[in-house]
Each structure stands twice: as structure tokens, then as C-alpha cells.
Image (cartoon, rainbow, N blue to C red):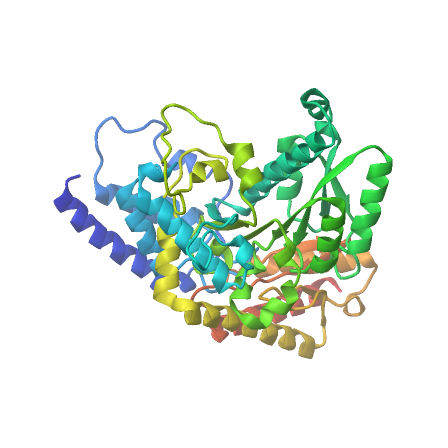
Length: 493
């Protein structure tokens, strides 16, 4: 493909993408194909000779499209949003144009420096403490800073490695030898609640520490008292607490942990405190939500997924650390083929030492496009629109009389179930009925949502966050929920 044909095909692909977005709400959000559907439809070896663009596009429409879950549909209410946007797509196009492997400043100075600037922009937009900024107000380099990771799971692993480094430094200060510290690795303990994302357990598995899962309270929150009690017991058993993850907006219910109380314990016990705000962190762009996040200014690290609820296409997981020393010390490996810049270093960050991979894409471009083309006001309007729609959904469910809200509706997530009093039979039948309503809604094909189980109770949890969703889409969701609930209760009760 030469430049002339590329220009032609890009215009055609832009039309194809625009047509998709104009019509995606008319498609069932959930794919109905069966596992293994694609294998018989495509050749089992790569083609020997070039194939035409037309053939490839035809296969996208006839073979790939049927197997797609349409996350960008305004009738998609599953898991959490993947809020892509056209500005982000344009930024990704420019990133693909450059196609760099930006492991350090020398590779492409603009890639490093734009990420430094844009992460400070985003940190200021959500009200992060100045400790997390790369550049101080006077233009000098700060101790902290932001870096774009692929996912919140990667961010979790990276900060756990940094926390382990901090713990080892402390043990050395107590006079322990390197050999003794190596022997003590398996006694390190990281703390999570039973509502923490699975990335916490995965991170513990990867770095080889113990994971202590602490029961959350009645509001699904990790509390100061529960954390302190777990630490006391572990210290009595000869273990070494070193890390705690607090969540601002849990996956099951969007609960907010006792951030201030957990920060108290982390400070007194010398733990690294990480705040996982992968979903709800975007809400902090709106000042009215910031009182809910008191305590994050005392954390060692903070993470939000701009690709969830901030209009930026996957992948773009924003991680900040208050002090990058332990992170860089833990992940730095020098080689003669990785040149370092001498002299002024305010904007010369080797982001390869802030993450697991060596190579990295120019991801800050799409975030830059989003923040410039939406502006802070546009991002806030998008967040507030979603929250307003979620509150309206909550009101409709409560007024219906058959449903009960199972967790406070604070952001865009509504967790509810059909009341036990409406369903004949025992708790098992109540759970079955609510799970069946989820299945029936998705089989209906007009909207998509998922259920979950919280402490043995089956619930529905539609998440509102579509980039282009309107009140009409939320009204359709209510309509389908009510219709399917009526049918299931009539058939089985």
C-alpha cells in the first residue's frame, strides 16, 4: 500500500467508523455467537499473496462484527464504561503515524515530555495534591509524578514492587543483611478488602508476597479498625505488613473505603498506601465529589483509568506516585544500549523505569486530544450527565415498588434486585429469579447489563457511562428491566 492508496483507504475507513457510530445503537449490544464460531470462517494459514482491502473490510462486516460486544453502544450498561471518543481516536491515529517505541527521552523527546505535562494537567483537573505533580509551580522537578500504564492491574503490580522496595530499605535500616531480607520476602503481607479488584491478589502472586483479604463492613468498605486488627495479628505471627490498597469506587458496588482511617494506619504502620480509583477517579474532575476522597492526599500512589470514565480510548491508565524514588530504584536496569541524558532533567524521565515493559506507545497524545477538545468543562458535563441518569434510574426503580437498591448510588453505578417479598420461595429462589432476570434482559437484545453476587445475594448492576448515551437510552433500560421482571415473576412465581 502506497501513500496514495493509504489516503483513499483512510477516508473510506473514517466513513466506515462514522457509519458504525451512527448505527451502533440499532445493533444488539451483546454478541450471540457460540465459542469457536470464527475458526471455520477464516483460513487456517496466513495468505501467501496480498489480499485486497475490500476483501478484508467485507470480512470485518460479515465475520468479525457478529462476534463483537458493542461497548460503544449507548445501550451497553455492562461492567464499567469504556468511554471512547472521537478526539481520542484522532490522537491514536497520530500515535500510530509516529509508531515509536518510547522507552526513554532520547527515543522521542516529545513523547516523554508531553506525558509529563499531560499527567500534571490531569492530576490538577481531579484535584490531586501537589506532591503528585512532576513539575513544581516554580518549574523545578518534583519528587513525584504521573505515568500512563496500560491498565489498573499493571499499576497495582508496579506500586506493589515499589512498596516492596520501600519495605526492604526500611529493613536494611534496622540492620538486616541482604540475605536475611531475601529470606523474609515470603513474610511480607499486602492488605486488601473482599471488595478489592482481583488485581490485588494477582499482584501479590506475581511479586511473591502474602495477600490478606479483610472482610468489608456493612457498606462494603474497608475500615480502619478492620485493617488495624489484621495487622496486629500478622505482626504477632511474625509477618511484615508493607502495603495496603484502598479503593475509591469498588467494582461490585462503587463503595468508597475509609480513606482517612486507612491513611492513619498506613502512616503509623509504615505501609505503602495505594488508592485504586480506576472507575470513580474520573468523577473527581467535578469538585462536588472531592469531599468523598479526603485522604488521597496522604497516599503514596493513586490510579484512575481514563479509558473507563474519562472519554479516552483503551488503554490509558493514569498512575501517580508522591515520590518516585522507590519505584525507579526497583525497576531501573541500565544497559549500554539505553543512553541516558546528562544535565537538566526536569522533563527527562525514563518512563521505562516507571512500568513493567521496556517499550511504550505514545499514549499521552490521545489524552492530550481529549483534554483539549473537550476541555475541563466538557469532561465535567459528561460525568455529571451520567450521574444524573443513574440517579434517575434509581428513582424509577424505587417508585416501581418491586425493586430495592443494594448500595448507595453515588456515581454511575446502580446496584439493585427484586425484593424478596415479591418472589415466592426461599433465598435460593430469590437469587435464581434475579439471575434469571439478568439473563432474560440480555437475551432480549435491546440493552446489555451484568449481575454480580454480593455476600451471597444475586443483584443487577447496570453501569451508566456511554459517551453518547442520553436519557432515552436510560429510559429504554428501565423499560426492558420492568418488562423482563414482569415476565420472569409471572412465569416462575
